[in-house]
Length: 371
Length: 152
View 1 (cartoon, one colour):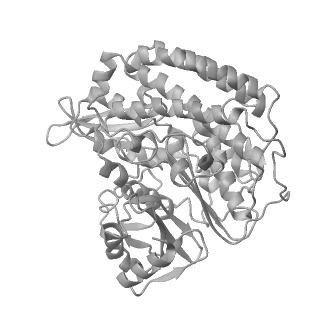
View 2 (tube, one colour):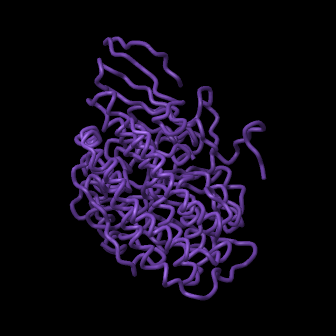
View 3 (spheres, helix red, strand yellow):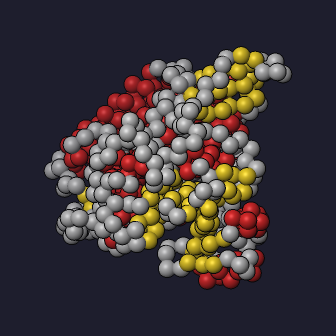
Protein backbone atom coordinates (compact mmCIF):
# COMPACT_ATOMS: atom_id res chain seq x y z
CA UNK A 1 0.00 0.00 0.00
CA UNK A 2 2.74 2.44 0.91
CA UNK A 3 4.75 3.53 -2.07
CA UNK A 4 8.40 4.24 -1.56
CA UNK A 5 9.56 7.80 -1.71
CA UNK A 6 11.30 8.13 -5.02
CA UNK A 7 10.99 9.29 -8.56
CA UNK A 8 8.83 8.06 -11.41
CA UNK A 9 10.11 7.24 -14.88
CA UNK A 10 9.31 10.78 -16.01
CA UNK A 11 11.42 12.18 -13.20
CA UNK A 12 8.53 13.24 -10.97
CA UNK A 13 8.99 13.09 -7.24
CA UNK A 14 6.70 10.93 -5.11
CA UNK A 15 6.23 11.98 -1.50
CA UNK A 16 4.05 10.83 1.35
CA UNK A 17 1.95 13.20 3.43
CA UNK A 18 0.76 11.43 6.53
CA UNK A 19 -0.55 9.13 7.91
CA UNK A 20 0.81 11.16 10.80
CA UNK A 21 0.76 14.75 9.67
CA UNK A 22 -0.93 17.63 11.48
CA UNK A 23 -2.58 18.92 8.30
CA UNK A 24 -4.42 15.66 7.66
CA UNK A 25 -6.36 16.04 10.95
CA UNK A 26 -6.01 12.39 11.73
CA UNK A 27 -4.60 9.33 10.08
CA UNK A 28 -5.00 10.08 6.40
CA UNK A 29 -2.22 9.11 4.05
CA UNK A 30 -1.71 10.95 0.77
CA UNK A 31 0.79 9.86 -1.84
CA UNK A 32 1.60 12.90 -3.93
CA UNK A 33 3.33 12.98 -7.29
CA UNK A 34 5.20 16.25 -7.74
CA UNK A 35 6.82 17.94 -10.68
CA UNK A 36 8.96 20.51 -8.96
CA UNK A 37 6.47 22.13 -6.61
CA UNK A 38 3.46 21.44 -8.81
CA UNK A 39 1.10 18.64 -7.86
CA UNK A 40 0.48 16.11 -10.64
CA UNK A 41 -1.52 13.61 -8.67
CA UNK A 42 -2.87 13.08 -5.16
CA UNK A 43 -3.71 9.56 -4.17
CA UNK A 44 -5.48 9.09 -0.83
CA UNK A 45 -4.79 5.87 1.04
CA UNK A 46 -7.48 5.21 3.61
CA UNK A 47 -8.23 2.70 6.27
CA UNK A 48 -5.92 3.56 9.17
CA UNK A 49 -8.96 3.96 11.40
CA UNK A 50 -11.30 1.58 9.57
CA UNK A 51 -13.37 -0.39 12.08
CA UNK A 52 -15.92 -1.78 9.67
CA UNK A 53 -18.79 -0.17 11.50
CA UNK A 54 -21.18 -1.46 8.84
CA UNK A 55 -20.22 -5.08 9.57
CA UNK A 56 -20.37 -4.46 13.31
CA UNK A 57 -23.89 -3.06 13.02
CA UNK A 58 -25.09 -6.27 11.41
CA UNK A 59 -24.77 -7.99 14.78
CA UNK A 60 -26.14 -5.12 16.86
CA UNK A 61 -29.81 -4.49 17.55
CA UNK A 62 -31.61 -1.34 16.49
CA UNK A 63 -31.20 0.03 20.00
CA UNK A 64 -27.49 -0.79 20.18
CA UNK A 65 -26.13 0.30 16.82
CA UNK A 66 -26.69 4.00 17.51
CA UNK A 67 -23.76 3.97 19.94
CA UNK A 68 -21.30 2.87 17.29
CA UNK A 69 -22.33 5.62 14.90
CA UNK A 70 -21.26 8.37 17.31
CA UNK A 71 -17.75 7.19 16.55
CA UNK A 72 -18.00 7.85 12.81
CA UNK A 73 -18.05 11.59 12.43
CA UNK A 74 -17.20 12.34 16.02
CA UNK A 75 -17.70 16.08 15.54
CA UNK A 76 -21.29 15.54 14.41
CA UNK A 77 -22.14 12.72 16.81
CA UNK A 78 -25.62 14.07 17.47
CA UNK A 79 -26.41 14.28 13.78
CA UNK A 80 -25.14 10.75 13.10
CA UNK A 81 -27.40 9.45 15.86
CA UNK A 82 -30.20 11.52 14.43
CA UNK A 83 -29.84 9.96 10.97
CA UNK A 84 -29.92 6.45 12.42
CA UNK A 85 -32.87 7.21 14.68
CA UNK A 86 -34.76 8.71 11.72
CA UNK A 87 -34.13 5.64 9.61
CA UNK A 88 -35.35 3.24 12.30
CA UNK A 89 -38.40 5.45 12.96
CA UNK A 90 -39.16 5.39 9.26
CA UNK A 91 -39.15 1.59 9.40
CA UNK A 92 -41.26 1.47 12.54
CA UNK A 93 -43.55 4.21 11.24
CA UNK A 94 -43.35 6.09 14.52
CA UNK A 95 -44.07 9.77 14.90
CA UNK A 96 -41.96 11.27 17.65
CA UNK A 97 -43.34 13.94 20.03
CA UNK A 98 -42.87 17.54 19.04
CA UNK A 99 -40.76 18.27 22.08
CA UNK A 100 -38.27 15.65 20.97
CA UNK A 101 -38.24 17.05 17.43
CA UNK A 102 -37.43 20.56 18.61
CA UNK A 103 -34.74 19.37 21.00
CA UNK A 104 -33.19 17.28 18.24
CA UNK A 105 -32.96 20.30 15.95
CA UNK A 106 -31.50 22.42 18.76
CA UNK A 107 -28.86 19.79 19.46
CA UNK A 108 -28.06 19.40 15.75
CA UNK A 109 -27.48 23.10 15.32
CA UNK A 110 -25.37 23.40 18.46
CA UNK A 111 -23.30 20.50 17.12
CA UNK A 112 -22.96 22.21 13.76
CA UNK A 113 -21.60 25.36 15.41
CA UNK A 114 -19.20 23.35 17.57
CA UNK A 115 -18.00 21.42 14.54
CA UNK A 116 -17.52 24.49 12.39
CA UNK A 117 -15.68 26.20 15.23
CA UNK A 118 -13.23 23.36 15.51
CA UNK A 119 -12.82 23.39 11.74
CA UNK A 120 -12.19 27.14 11.78
CA UNK A 121 -9.49 26.91 14.43
CA UNK A 122 -7.83 23.89 12.86
CA UNK A 123 -7.90 25.42 9.40
CA UNK A 124 -6.28 28.62 10.57
CA UNK A 125 -3.66 26.48 12.27
CA UNK A 126 -3.03 24.61 9.02
CA UNK A 127 -2.30 27.92 7.36
CA UNK A 128 0.14 28.93 10.06
CA UNK A 129 -1.82 30.84 12.70
CA UNK A 130 -2.03 29.36 16.14
CA UNK A 131 -4.12 31.91 18.03
CA UNK A 132 -7.51 31.27 16.26
CA UNK A 133 -7.44 27.70 17.54
CA UNK A 134 -7.70 28.91 21.12
CA UNK A 135 -10.38 31.42 20.23
CA UNK A 136 -12.44 28.70 18.58
CA UNK A 137 -12.02 26.29 21.46
CA UNK A 138 -13.11 28.91 23.94
CA UNK A 139 -16.59 29.02 22.39
CA UNK A 140 -16.66 25.32 21.60
CA UNK A 141 -16.03 24.46 25.25
CA UNK A 142 -19.24 26.29 26.18
CA UNK A 143 -21.21 24.05 23.80
CA UNK A 144 -19.47 20.96 25.12
CA UNK A 145 -20.42 21.95 28.66
CA UNK A 146 -24.06 22.33 27.60
CA UNK A 147 -23.94 18.88 26.00
CA UNK A 148 -22.28 17.37 29.05
CA UNK A 149 -25.03 18.62 31.32
CA UNK A 150 -27.88 17.19 29.27
CA UNK A 151 -26.34 14.17 27.54
CA UNK A 152 -23.64 13.17 30.03
CA UNK A 153 -20.94 13.23 27.39
CA UNK A 154 -18.97 15.86 25.56
CA UNK A 155 -18.17 14.18 22.28
CA UNK A 156 -19.99 10.87 21.77
CA UNK A 157 -23.38 11.81 23.08
CA UNK A 158 -25.69 8.92 22.03
CA UNK A 159 -28.58 11.17 23.00
CA UNK A 160 -30.97 10.59 20.11
CA UNK A 161 -32.47 7.13 20.14
CA UNK A 162 -35.21 5.54 18.04
CA UNK A 163 -38.47 6.99 19.33
CA UNK A 164 -37.09 10.24 20.67
CA UNK A 165 -34.42 11.14 23.16
CA UNK A 166 -32.46 9.30 25.80
CA UNK A 167 -33.37 11.75 28.56
CA UNK A 168 -35.09 15.04 29.07
CA UNK A 169 -33.26 18.35 28.98
CA UNK A 170 -31.27 19.53 31.96
CA UNK A 171 -33.09 22.39 33.77
CA UNK A 172 -30.17 24.71 33.01
CA UNK A 173 -30.27 24.06 29.26
CA UNK A 174 -32.22 27.10 28.10
CA UNK A 175 -30.31 29.49 30.33
CA UNK A 176 -26.93 28.18 29.24
CA UNK A 177 -27.80 28.20 25.54
CA UNK A 178 -28.91 31.83 25.82
CA UNK A 179 -25.65 32.65 27.55
CA UNK A 180 -23.84 30.96 24.70
CA UNK A 181 -25.73 32.98 22.07
CA UNK A 182 -24.73 36.21 23.82
CA UNK A 183 -21.12 35.06 24.00
CA UNK A 184 -21.10 33.95 20.37
CA UNK A 185 -22.44 37.28 19.11
CA UNK A 186 -19.81 39.07 21.11
CA UNK A 187 -16.97 36.93 19.82
CA UNK A 188 -17.87 36.27 16.19
CA UNK A 189 -16.43 39.65 15.21
CA UNK A 190 -13.06 38.45 16.43
CA UNK A 191 -13.25 35.66 13.87
CA UNK A 192 -13.67 38.21 11.11
CA UNK A 193 -10.90 40.40 12.44
CA UNK A 194 -8.45 37.58 12.97
CA UNK A 195 -8.95 35.50 9.84
CA UNK A 196 -11.76 36.39 7.45
CA UNK A 197 -10.62 39.95 6.81
CA UNK A 198 -6.94 39.12 7.02
CA UNK A 199 -5.32 39.77 3.66
CA UNK A 200 -2.72 37.01 4.13
CA UNK A 201 -5.44 34.41 4.69
CA UNK A 202 -7.48 35.67 1.78
CA UNK A 203 -4.49 35.46 -0.55
CA UNK A 204 -3.80 31.93 0.57
CA UNK A 205 -7.39 30.81 0.01
CA UNK A 206 -8.71 32.76 -2.95
CA UNK A 207 -8.42 30.93 -6.25
CA UNK A 208 -7.02 27.84 -4.50
CA UNK A 209 -8.61 24.43 -4.99
CA UNK A 210 -11.17 25.41 -7.58
CA UNK A 211 -14.10 23.03 -7.96
CA UNK A 212 -16.78 23.74 -10.55
CA UNK A 213 -20.44 23.12 -9.76
CA UNK A 214 -20.60 20.32 -12.32
CA UNK A 215 -17.58 18.55 -10.86
CA UNK A 216 -18.87 19.00 -7.33
CA UNK A 217 -22.05 17.14 -8.28
CA UNK A 218 -20.21 14.48 -10.26
CA UNK A 219 -17.83 13.77 -7.37
CA UNK A 220 -20.81 13.44 -5.05
CA UNK A 221 -19.73 16.40 -2.92
CA UNK A 222 -22.24 17.73 -0.46
CA UNK A 223 -22.46 20.18 2.39
CA UNK A 224 -20.31 23.32 2.47
CA UNK A 225 -17.90 21.78 -0.06
CA UNK A 226 -20.59 21.70 -2.75
CA UNK A 227 -22.31 24.88 -1.60
CA UNK A 228 -19.05 26.77 -2.05
CA UNK A 229 -19.39 25.88 -5.73
CA UNK A 230 -22.94 27.15 -5.88
CA UNK A 231 -24.67 23.75 -5.71
CA UNK A 232 -27.85 23.94 -3.69
CA UNK A 233 -27.77 20.71 -1.69
CA UNK A 234 -28.90 21.44 1.87
CA UNK A 235 -30.94 18.42 2.96
CA UNK A 236 -32.60 20.58 5.62
CA UNK A 237 -34.12 22.63 2.80
CA UNK A 238 -34.60 20.01 0.06
CA UNK A 239 -35.88 17.07 2.10
CA UNK A 240 -36.86 18.66 5.43
CA UNK A 241 -36.98 16.45 8.49
CA UNK A 242 -38.23 17.20 12.02
CA UNK A 243 -39.24 20.89 12.22
CA UNK A 244 -36.82 22.35 9.67
CA UNK A 245 -39.61 23.20 7.22
CA UNK A 246 -41.18 25.51 9.80
CA UNK A 247 -38.01 27.44 10.52
CA UNK A 248 -36.62 30.52 8.91
CA UNK A 249 -33.04 30.19 7.76
CA UNK A 250 -31.08 30.56 4.54
CA UNK A 251 -29.04 28.07 2.64
CA UNK A 252 -25.63 29.74 2.41
CA UNK A 253 -24.34 29.61 -1.15
CA UNK A 254 -21.14 30.95 -2.68
CA UNK A 255 -20.36 30.62 -6.35
CA UNK A 256 -16.58 31.04 -6.62
CA UNK A 257 -15.83 27.38 -5.90
CA UNK A 258 -12.45 28.07 -4.30
CA UNK A 259 -11.22 27.53 -0.75
CA UNK A 260 -12.32 30.98 0.34
CA UNK A 261 -15.87 30.33 -0.89
CA UNK A 262 -16.04 27.12 1.16
CA UNK A 263 -14.67 29.08 4.11
CA UNK A 264 -17.35 31.74 3.77
CA UNK A 265 -20.11 29.11 3.53
CA UNK A 266 -19.13 27.64 6.89
CA UNK A 267 -18.89 31.04 8.55
CA UNK A 268 -22.34 31.88 7.15
CA UNK A 269 -23.73 28.56 8.34
CA UNK A 270 -22.71 29.24 11.91
CA UNK A 271 -24.77 32.45 11.84
CA UNK A 272 -27.73 30.58 10.34
CA UNK A 273 -27.49 27.95 13.08
CA UNK A 274 -27.61 30.69 15.70
CA UNK A 275 -30.70 32.02 13.94
CA UNK A 276 -32.36 28.59 14.16
CA UNK A 277 -31.46 28.20 17.82
CA UNK A 278 -32.87 31.64 18.63
CA UNK A 279 -36.18 30.70 17.01
CA UNK A 280 -36.50 27.51 19.02
CA UNK A 281 -34.91 28.09 22.39
CA UNK A 282 -37.92 29.87 23.88
CA UNK A 283 -40.41 27.65 22.09
CA UNK A 284 -39.59 24.17 23.31
CA UNK A 285 -43.03 22.57 23.66
CA UNK A 286 -43.97 20.65 26.76
CA UNK A 287 -44.77 16.99 26.64
CA UNK A 288 -43.00 13.69 26.31
CA UNK A 289 -39.47 13.41 25.05
CA UNK A 290 -40.03 9.89 23.78
CA UNK A 291 -42.69 8.13 21.77
CA UNK A 292 -43.98 4.84 23.10
CA UNK A 293 -41.99 2.09 21.43
CA UNK A 294 -41.48 -1.58 22.18
CA UNK A 295 -38.47 -2.63 24.22
CA UNK A 296 -37.22 -4.87 21.42
CA UNK A 297 -37.44 -3.13 18.07
CA UNK A 298 -38.19 -5.13 14.95
CA UNK A 299 -38.21 -3.48 11.56
CA UNK A 300 -40.48 -4.91 8.88
CA UNK A 301 -38.91 -6.54 5.84
CA UNK A 302 -37.83 -3.84 3.45
CA UNK A 303 -35.39 -1.06 2.79
CA UNK A 304 -35.21 2.29 4.53
CA UNK A 305 -33.10 5.30 3.71
CA UNK A 306 -32.75 8.50 5.69
CA UNK A 307 -30.74 11.58 4.81
CA UNK A 308 -29.64 14.36 7.10
CA UNK A 309 -27.33 17.33 6.82
CA UNK A 310 -24.29 16.96 9.06
CA UNK A 311 -21.64 19.63 9.48
CA UNK A 312 -19.77 18.08 6.56
CA UNK A 313 -22.63 17.33 4.21
CA UNK A 314 -25.17 14.70 3.40
CA UNK A 315 -25.18 11.64 5.62
CA UNK A 316 -27.29 8.76 4.36
CA UNK A 317 -28.26 5.71 6.38
CA UNK A 318 -29.47 2.77 4.32
CA UNK A 319 -30.96 -0.13 6.26
CA UNK A 320 -31.93 -3.39 4.62
CA UNK A 321 -34.14 -5.35 6.98
CA UNK A 322 -35.20 -8.98 6.84
CA UNK A 323 -37.69 -8.50 9.65
CA UNK A 324 -35.37 -9.27 12.54
CA UNK A 325 -34.02 -7.32 15.47
CA UNK A 326 -30.73 -6.52 13.73
CA UNK A 327 -30.19 -4.94 10.32
CA UNK A 328 -29.39 -7.40 7.53
CA UNK A 329 -27.19 -4.83 5.84
CA UNK A 330 -26.50 -1.26 6.76
CA UNK A 331 -24.67 1.32 4.70
CA UNK A 332 -23.49 4.72 5.86
CA UNK A 333 -23.09 7.12 3.00
CA UNK A 334 -20.61 9.41 4.68
CA UNK A 335 -20.11 12.93 3.32
CA UNK A 336 -16.36 12.95 3.92
CA UNK A 337 -15.71 9.92 1.71
CA UNK A 338 -17.24 11.57 -1.33
CA UNK A 339 -15.78 14.99 -0.58
CA UNK A 340 -12.30 13.49 -0.33
CA UNK A 341 -12.63 11.89 -3.76
CA UNK A 342 -12.64 15.39 -5.27
CA UNK A 343 -9.29 16.29 -3.70
CA UNK A 344 -7.20 14.82 -6.52
CA UNK A 345 -9.16 16.78 -9.10
CA UNK A 346 -8.89 20.01 -7.10
CA UNK A 347 -5.20 19.71 -6.35
CA UNK A 348 -3.84 18.86 -9.79
CA UNK A 349 -1.77 21.70 -11.16
CA UNK A 350 -1.55 23.69 -7.94
CA UNK A 351 1.41 24.11 -5.62
CA UNK A 352 2.17 21.74 -2.78
CA UNK A 353 1.84 24.55 -0.24
CA UNK A 354 -1.76 25.12 -1.28
CA UNK A 355 -2.74 21.54 -0.55
CA UNK A 356 -3.26 22.24 3.16
CA UNK A 357 -5.61 25.10 2.30
CA UNK A 358 -7.67 22.72 0.16
CA UNK A 359 -7.70 19.94 2.75
CA UNK A 360 -8.54 22.47 5.44
CA UNK A 361 -11.61 23.69 3.62
CA UNK A 362 -12.79 20.16 2.79
CA UNK A 363 -13.14 19.72 6.56
CA UNK A 364 -11.96 16.13 6.63
CA UNK A 365 -12.78 13.97 9.62
CA UNK A 366 -10.99 10.69 9.09
CA UNK A 367 -13.24 8.30 11.07
CA UNK A 368 -16.11 9.63 8.96
CA UNK A 369 -14.24 8.68 5.78
CA UNK A 370 -12.98 5.28 6.92
CA UNK A 371 -15.99 4.29 9.04
CA UNK B 1 -41.29 13.87 -12.13
CA UNK B 2 -43.16 11.62 -9.75
CA UNK B 3 -42.64 7.86 -9.55
CA UNK B 4 -45.34 7.04 -12.13
CA UNK B 5 -43.89 9.40 -14.74
CA UNK B 6 -40.38 8.11 -14.06
CA UNK B 7 -41.63 4.58 -14.55
CA UNK B 8 -43.16 5.40 -17.91
CA UNK B 9 -40.09 7.27 -19.13
CA UNK B 10 -37.64 4.58 -18.05
CA UNK B 11 -39.77 1.73 -19.46
CA UNK B 12 -39.57 3.51 -22.81
CA UNK B 13 -35.78 3.55 -22.54
CA UNK B 14 -35.36 -0.05 -21.44
CA UNK B 15 -38.41 -2.30 -21.81
CA UNK B 16 -36.77 -5.34 -20.19
CA UNK B 17 -36.42 -3.85 -16.71
CA UNK B 18 -38.75 -4.54 -13.80
CA UNK B 19 -39.94 -2.23 -11.07
CA UNK B 20 -40.52 -2.52 -7.36
CA UNK B 21 -42.87 -0.05 -5.80
CA UNK B 22 -44.14 0.67 -2.35
CA UNK B 23 -40.93 2.10 -0.99
CA UNK B 24 -40.05 5.75 -0.78
CA UNK B 25 -38.44 5.75 -4.20
CA UNK B 26 -38.97 3.85 -7.41
CA UNK B 27 -36.75 0.77 -7.57
CA UNK B 28 -35.58 -0.49 -10.94
CA UNK B 29 -34.07 -3.92 -11.51
CA UNK B 30 -31.73 -4.20 -14.46
CA UNK B 31 -29.56 -6.93 -15.88
CA UNK B 32 -25.82 -6.21 -15.39
CA UNK B 33 -25.32 -6.06 -19.15
CA UNK B 34 -28.02 -3.37 -19.52
CA UNK B 35 -26.69 -1.20 -16.73
CA UNK B 36 -24.07 0.92 -18.53
CA UNK B 37 -26.28 2.00 -21.46
CA UNK B 38 -29.16 2.74 -19.08
CA UNK B 39 -26.84 4.71 -16.77
CA UNK B 40 -25.74 6.87 -19.68
CA UNK B 41 -29.34 7.58 -20.61
CA UNK B 42 -30.33 8.31 -17.02
CA UNK B 43 -27.49 10.81 -16.76
CA UNK B 44 -27.87 12.49 -20.15
CA UNK B 45 -31.62 12.47 -20.83
CA UNK B 46 -32.79 16.06 -20.33
CA UNK B 47 -36.04 15.11 -18.59
CA UNK B 48 -34.39 12.58 -16.26
CA UNK B 49 -30.97 14.18 -15.68
CA UNK B 50 -29.76 11.99 -12.79
CA UNK B 51 -26.46 13.78 -12.21
CA UNK B 52 -25.92 12.99 -8.54
CA UNK B 53 -25.03 9.45 -7.46
CA UNK B 54 -25.43 9.79 -3.73
CA UNK B 55 -25.04 6.21 -2.64
CA UNK B 56 -23.49 3.14 -4.21
CA UNK B 57 -23.35 -0.11 -2.35
CA UNK B 58 -23.79 -3.87 -2.48
CA UNK B 59 -25.83 -6.39 -0.51
CA UNK B 60 -24.89 -10.03 0.00
CA UNK B 61 -28.00 -12.22 -0.17
CA UNK B 62 -26.00 -15.45 0.27
CA UNK B 63 -27.33 -16.76 -3.06
CA UNK B 64 -26.46 -13.68 -5.08
CA UNK B 65 -25.15 -10.15 -4.71
CA UNK B 66 -27.20 -7.04 -5.44
CA UNK B 67 -25.62 -3.78 -6.51
CA UNK B 68 -27.64 -0.77 -5.35
CA UNK B 69 -27.30 2.68 -6.90
CA UNK B 70 -29.14 5.66 -5.40
CA UNK B 71 -29.51 8.43 -7.94
CA UNK B 72 -30.81 11.94 -7.64
CA UNK B 73 -31.23 14.88 -9.95
CA UNK B 74 -30.04 18.28 -8.78
CA UNK B 75 -32.13 19.97 -11.45
CA UNK B 76 -35.40 17.99 -11.43
CA UNK B 77 -35.19 16.90 -7.75
CA UNK B 78 -36.34 13.34 -8.25
CA UNK B 79 -34.72 10.17 -6.93
CA UNK B 80 -34.55 6.56 -8.06
CA UNK B 81 -32.86 3.38 -6.92
CA UNK B 82 -31.32 1.05 -9.49
CA UNK B 83 -30.55 -2.52 -8.52
CA UNK B 84 -28.68 -5.19 -10.38
CA UNK B 85 -28.44 -8.84 -9.43
CA UNK B 86 -24.95 -10.35 -9.74
CA UNK B 87 -23.69 -13.90 -9.76
CA UNK B 88 -22.10 -14.54 -6.35
CA UNK B 89 -19.30 -16.79 -7.61
CA UNK B 90 -18.15 -14.37 -10.28
CA UNK B 91 -19.64 -10.92 -9.69
CA UNK B 92 -18.98 -8.57 -12.59
CA UNK B 93 -20.56 -5.33 -13.71
CA UNK B 94 -19.51 -2.37 -15.84
CA UNK B 95 -18.09 0.61 -14.00
CA UNK B 96 -20.01 3.89 -14.03
CA UNK B 97 -17.02 5.95 -12.87
CA UNK B 98 -16.90 7.74 -16.21
CA UNK B 99 -20.48 8.94 -15.79
CA UNK B 100 -20.41 9.78 -12.09
CA UNK B 101 -16.85 10.39 -10.89
CA UNK B 102 -17.73 9.61 -7.28
CA UNK B 103 -18.32 6.01 -8.36
CA UNK B 104 -14.57 5.47 -8.70
CA UNK B 105 -14.06 5.54 -4.91
CA UNK B 106 -17.32 3.82 -4.07
CA UNK B 107 -16.65 1.01 -6.52
CA UNK B 108 -13.19 0.48 -5.10
CA UNK B 109 -14.79 0.07 -1.69
CA UNK B 110 -17.33 -2.44 -3.00
CA UNK B 111 -14.55 -4.26 -4.86
CA UNK B 112 -12.51 -4.87 -1.72
CA UNK B 113 -15.44 -5.51 0.62
CA UNK B 114 -17.58 -7.72 -1.65
CA UNK B 115 -15.24 -8.77 -4.45
CA UNK B 116 -17.35 -7.28 -7.22
CA UNK B 117 -15.22 -6.78 -10.31
CA UNK B 118 -15.96 -3.50 -12.06
CA UNK B 119 -15.13 -3.86 -15.74
CA UNK B 120 -13.12 -1.01 -17.28
CA UNK B 121 -12.60 0.66 -13.93
CA UNK B 122 -9.57 3.01 -14.20
CA UNK B 123 -7.91 2.02 -10.93
CA UNK B 124 -9.42 -1.05 -9.28
CA UNK B 125 -7.23 -1.55 -6.19
CA UNK B 126 -7.69 -1.85 -2.45
CA UNK B 127 -8.69 1.48 -0.93
CA UNK B 128 -9.43 0.93 2.74
CA UNK B 129 -8.06 -2.53 3.54
CA UNK B 130 -4.31 -3.04 4.03
CA UNK B 131 -2.00 -5.07 1.79
CA UNK B 132 -2.53 -8.79 1.79
CA UNK B 133 -6.31 -8.64 2.08
CA UNK B 134 -6.88 -9.63 -1.51
CA UNK B 135 -9.12 -12.67 -1.73
CA UNK B 136 -10.84 -12.25 1.62
CA UNK B 137 -14.04 -10.25 1.34
CA UNK B 138 -14.95 -8.93 4.79
CA UNK B 139 -18.49 -7.76 4.06
CA UNK B 140 -19.67 -11.11 2.73
CA UNK B 141 -21.95 -12.95 5.11
CA UNK B 142 -19.76 -16.06 5.30
CA UNK B 143 -16.61 -14.14 6.21
CA UNK B 144 -15.03 -15.29 9.45
CA UNK B 145 -11.99 -13.80 11.11
CA UNK B 146 -11.13 -14.96 14.61
CA UNK B 147 -8.60 -12.18 15.18
CA UNK B 148 -10.14 -9.03 13.78
CA UNK B 149 -13.82 -9.73 14.38
CA UNK B 150 -15.53 -9.48 17.72
CA UNK B 151 -18.98 -11.03 18.01
CA UNK B 152 -21.35 -9.35 20.39
